[in-house]
Length: 85
Image (tube, rainbow, N blue to C red; front, top):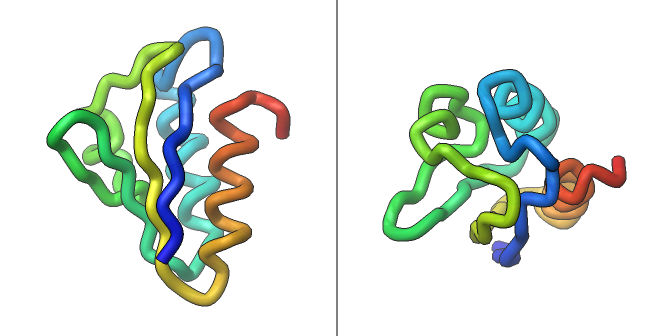
């Protein structure tokens, strides 16, 4: 399992449309992927779960991935959140 702290660098934060894209990015991978913010931990492949986090720009989160493609999953999610993809 890989766990990495990340910062939301997308200028609008993760509003509804961008949460949908985030979930699409996470769903490409076989690994189980979770996002934790404060005391809440949600499945990164769940649009409803991700929407409950309400993540604005500059917010810090912890992303964890476990599975065969966990390293690539963490890398791609980091790229998406830093808006450098």
